[in-house]
Amino acid sequence: MTSGMKVMLGLAAVLFAGAPWMIDAAPYEATMGLVYKIYFFHMPSAWMFLVAAITAGIASFRLLFLKRPGADHWVVAAAELAVLFGAFTLVSGPLWARKAWGVWWVWDARLTSSLMVFLIFVAYTLLRKYGGPGSEKLGAGLALFGMANVPFIYVSVNYWRTFHPPTSVVPTLPVAMGIPLWYCVTAFTLLFIVLLRLRARVEHQRARLEALYLAEDEL
Amino acid sequence: MRLGTFLLVLLLNGVAPAYALAQPQPPKDFVPVSEAPAGEQIPAMPLLGSAYAFIWVGVLGYVWSLGRKLQRIDREISELESRKR
Image 1 (cartoon, rainbow over the protein chains, first blue to last red):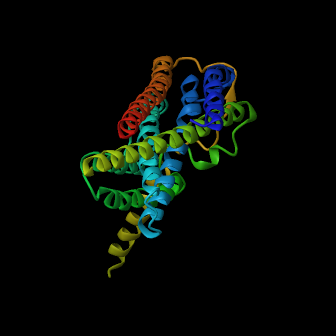
Image 2: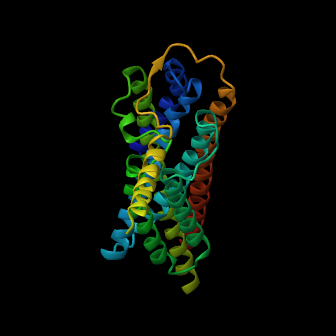
């Protein structure tokens, strides 16, 4: 791990350690009360989920169309993070909804499309684990399809009827709620960058190990 | 088309959008208050705690598993390289 990565990981750890105090200091919401505070981890998780899907899509494009084999390590890393942050989003959301809406889940456009993209990246990780040689190109096609759904997820709350808050909530957030939110967004962004680079490094070293074993077999 | 049928179709076309518009609207803005609203029927704390615990455990577990994986691979690489020399 480089010194820059260590600094970022340390900074992310410090920000995460301070998050409970920031969130505790935030005011309650008039209709949702205490439970809305799930928002401070739910929204950054959802953003990182979408950023991971976009990263996987861009790396897949580089692998498939620009013939950069090294891009595969980034697709694997970003797809795994899409599963991780997607799971955070899809678990924390229903816990919030149970209190705010009275139900765990509704099959509206935002929730359903998020679940679909999450399942696409779960399919990608299973494909890479069990698909054998050549699965990287098929997987890259799948990741591109996952990225194509991201704009649909983002605008779905503005065009279709849903209980989910629209995208306009973030820019109109009062300062007392905005400060903890952007604090958590910073913590999650740093965490995402560190995890992405760390996971890509694991993949790079794994490829190096495979090459060493192959070279030893040939001797 | 008979006038009665025409009026019936017109009425049915008007009823559906009017019914849809009568549905509860999603919240447009978040409004801050200093106290939690009274008379909450579902306790919020277990839901809030579960959401944060799930994310914390997920992050720590993932970082730990990545660290172990990287250590194992690095160890195997150094073993192979020392064997080659």
